[in-house]
Image 1 (tube, one colour):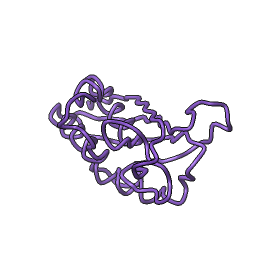
Image 2 (spheres, one colour):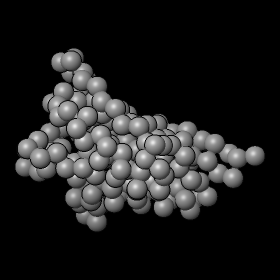
Image 3 (cartoon, one colour):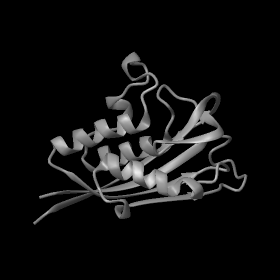
Image 4 (cartoon, helix red, strand yellow):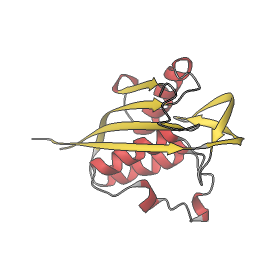
Length: 158
């Protein structure tokens, strides 16, 4: 019988106009980026936390400290790939993932397919096992001026 586990991840970053916006490994031209020790890719960070949680391996901050210069500016897909390797070392495989971006802007729909493709490649799953959605907080202040992301990941170990 297979062992199935689920993990939940959340990440949020404030804006930083001096860098490009990266979400799910995709650049959003003309949009202000997100602040952070890494590239601020909230999609990849939320997914990484979901994977680590499902495998009971802690969280992103535990493995990729924001005080460690080795991770300064690390690309979200690179960080996510490292987490996938950690999960696979525990004999888990990613089954599927679902992310919801919470932001007033940018619109995610035009980049949805590119994000799905990038994330699926990093997680080593078919694109149809990755869901990418977005919602606007409608001025309620849920993310301030920044961007947040919720992610759920399903792992399986035989």
